[in-house]
Image (cartoon, rainbow, N blue to C red):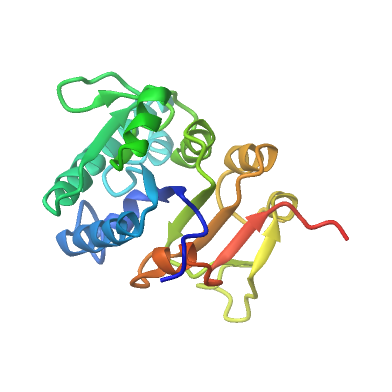
Length: 242
């Protein structure tokens, strides 16, 4: 395999990605698949940080629509991300990968508190870090947490692993004529409301020039192939001047 294009990456993984074909919770087969993808990425010499969502267990915003207090619902969603992070950690460590779960909410019995310098040191030692509980604040999504943590740990790229193979000009599930972008600017994502990530996350990446690669998680080996330089998915980055 060619030398990696990136040495340190942050992977944003939704909670729904862990459901597989289930309607709720964690699918064991999908958990194994994700763990294998992470191991393969680490084995080619890439430092890996993950931010995981919790939508497979609990969604704070959806709960607010049903009458649950928004702040309480968001904290419940943060706890769901910790469950997913612990499941991933167990799966990775069974494969011999040293892993640390770090949380924005203090819960030392199950995870380390997130401290930026400690997180960077774990990466330098070859450990996979899983960053849970979002930013630790209500009203902020795990997308925003991913952008924030990518900046803090100085990741070279933010990988957004999804169920689709990139960014389209409309929903490809509803519009068979939807057009896929190979590359799109941050500004166009915001202006056209392309729903790659929430607007706060896009703005953070734009201000700090962190490219976002949106791709299909379910394609075996996709993460490593992107790191090796293959053009897979859609790159969100600053528009080239010329």
